[in-house]
Structures are given as C-alpha cells and as structure tokens.
Amino acid sequence: MRDFHDLKVWQRSHQLTLEIYQATQTFPKEEIYGLTSQIRRASASIPANLAEGCGKQGPTELARYSQIAMGSASELEYHLLLSHDLHYLDDAHFTKLTTELVEIRRMLNVFLHRLRSE
Image (cartoon, rainbow, N blue to C red):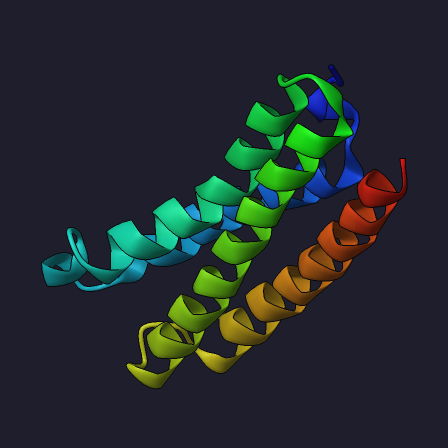
C-alpha cells in the first residue's frame, strides 16, 4: 500500500482536475448534464483511480488502476478537443490544459513501466 499523496502524477492530475472544474464553469448551462459533467468526471477519474490503486495490495493492482487512469486521460483529451471545437474553451485554455494532460499521460506511462518491472 502506498500513500497516493506522495505520487507526483497524482499531485499533477489533482491540480489539473481543479483547473478543469474552473475552466468548465463558463460552459453553457445546457451542457451541465452533458459535456461539463463528462469532462469533469473524466478528469477526476485520473487521480481517483490512482488513489484507489494505492489502497490495493501490490504493484499489479496499482498498475491496473493506473491503466484505468490512462484511459480516463485519453477520454479527457477528446473532451478537451471537443470543447475547443465547440468554442467552449478558448485557444489559451485549450493549450494550457492539453499540454498539462500530455505531461500527465507521459508520467503515467513511466509510472506504469516502473510498476510492471517490480
């Protein structure tokens, strides 16, 4: 069992989730149960799955939950693109959020490789 607070990838994904919540506050009200909800859930799923995996026994379980977090990161990447294409996110927010997401995905990939070699 690990303390998820110590993982840099968890810290970065938690910070991204906070930024996502702030960025989606300006989305149209008719999207509250649609894209706004989807993008927030996909974002929160990344650190949530890392936290859940840390509560399990052994690197195999943590790797499984980290892989789920990676899937959520891919989903979020699409939602950010869709939000940008619908003009809900301006260029600056889109670039900032996707740049951070790409870095988190890279960190998750490195983390997964380490876990699988343990």
